[in-house]
Image (cartoon, rainbow, N blue to C red; front, side, top):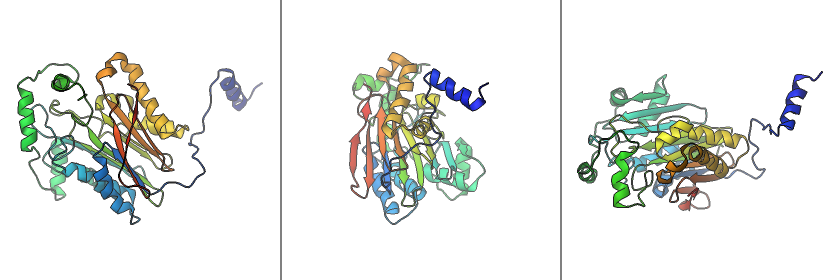
Length: 338
């Protein structure tokens, strides 16, 4: 009679199943640390502030918070924070999440009138028993913590919204708010730097600990109250200090449906490289959505505990920024399916 262990082993071999170790096997070379990576070209400026923390042996959590605050305050960046494009009612609502090396995490959803949602998310993590606060509750908490109300709708974003209103269609069709972009410029696909995006950042500090942050003003001209993947732990951001971290960008609904960033980290646990893990997560979406992904953008970015990084997207055009001791302003183009 076969014992249980031999039965499982025999069955796995006979069916061609490969049983993988629960922890990924990293290469024997010395880890590339400290290092910080982030989504899109505007990640260079954000990385620079994060590097100021890492380069003086600061921790990864402080680094990612300080880094993404640069994008949140950038008036020219219409996809993150102050100056972000509003929802279809003309209201700027912000989402953000943050996660440390111990698995602690915090997030704010549909937050209004606060310039730095990432800092509010960190305080949710550190000062409450909760993971997420939303809407008026998140605003109330922010004000109690000393944050000040600010008008986040700039004249540029207000003007763009008013132009959009002229041809807006209030229909229950997925991403109908993006049709204006498709008509005006086909290269402005939903999810790229011209429409709605986020900055996702991952850092590995000199102590070998990881943290991540993700912040956005969300999909341009979305329904009021819509929340994407950015503040959802496991979707827009996930960090496991034994393995690595991942973040995402693009149409958040598809990332949420696949718990994308958690999937990427779990694939790295199974031995995938960061790029391979990102590609597999993208292929899950493509397999489920089939032809509809031809006008859909989702990109994943990952960093493992060795300081190795990689990215993959549905559409071409996704870029990411890397900052380490060798080079502080490196921009790479992520590989893509289309």
